[in-house]
Length: 422
Image 1 (cartoon, one colour):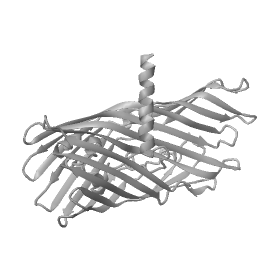
Image 2 (cartoon, helix red, strand yellow):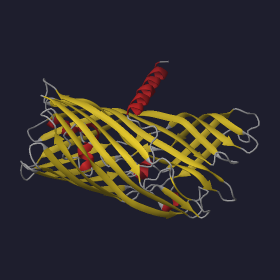
Image 3 (cartoon, one colour):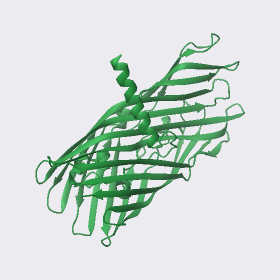
Image 4 (cartoon, one colour):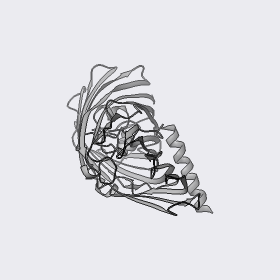
């Protein structure tokens, strides 16, 4: 009974975090795979080159060692508005349509404060880690007719982090928390042998460690390691259209998805009081995280069901990814800081397993923005991220699209409101 109670409590915490983060209806905004390129406006506007810079509450999710730079109390509320410019699917059956879900709002925030008794800063943060999917209406089908195709997959985190100044030069940090994932998808649900899968979710613990080392007065080195988190999603329902009737399976789950193991290293150079230049290399172990997924459905609501149990295996076979991020910040005056960045990660999805379910094919990301200090306590940061169109021609034998093309292009507006107390 205790195990069940703890599991239910964790599930409730995860669902609450996901509701806060507006992460239950994410379209295909995936950037580095299905991860966002950064977290918090400064990280994002520097192209995700954050591991050696991290200095606000988003350090909880980028490099917790950076929390040691914060003195006093800091709150950061951040968000992003996504506009999908060209999330489209075309195939040999005459379909060439854009996804209907063009806008998405993402949100999060964090609060940290330094500890009086220790050379440490600790806090709590909530983050949208990433997601994928799109809603396509009236696909042309092989054999005639039209039907819908939709997928929404979201990942959110709530995390506790601490960073400590171990020596004058070395800071170490760590993060623990809960990762929440939810999914719903449908494929030709109004047609024979069509399916609709929804209401499946799951909560799992995660952790991260990091370090920052001041090599010289102007150069800081950083590193962070993130452990893989498996994301089995259970408690769902699956409706299967067997032609004569729609059978609902009351026990459906999806296994095989995970957030990947990551290792990031970077350096930041501050040659004077105005300029800050940063570089990050991030290895993402997609090969281990997304290999094969399995959808299982049991307990049909009708004795006339063709199948007492449905099992569908789906190959993913993602490749590992090395992401290069570069960013700069320039203090124009006492109140204004300008930002720019660039992020590149080669599409990790093989052509043979490409799918509109997870359109994480974007590769190049360009960012620019500014922070304005409204008062000694309040700062507002805002800017843009643009990912130019990527086109992938594919033929996935597990999908009924034949020769097809997936296109993705995105524009983000990032913003953050910060409050600091000494």
